[in-house]
Image 1 (cartoon, helix red, strand yellow):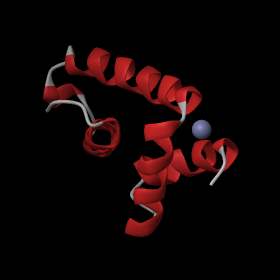
Image 2 (image 1 turned 30 degrees about the horizontal axis):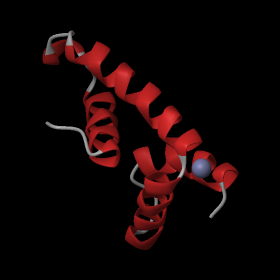
Image 3 (image 1 turned 120 degrees about the vertical axis):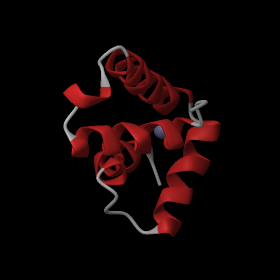
Image 4 (image 1 turned 180 degrees about the vertical axis):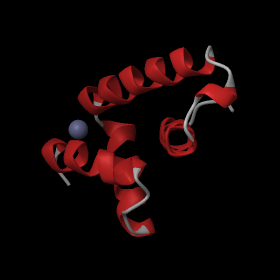
Length: 77
Ligand SMILES: [Zn+2]
């Protein structure tokens, strides 16, 4: 997969619409690609901002998406 495919797939990944195999391909790509890591780090910053908001103010599906981002980035949760 090239970077464009990764970035296009990222939103689907967050929406839990990709097969496990494709998810692993994205994760493998991220290990070796600085540019895509930057994108993921930006998403991580968004996650940190959301963590400042009480849970009951976050709609359920947004919270689920953020958990997927956390898994993707390998962050501590
Ligand atoms: Zn890339």
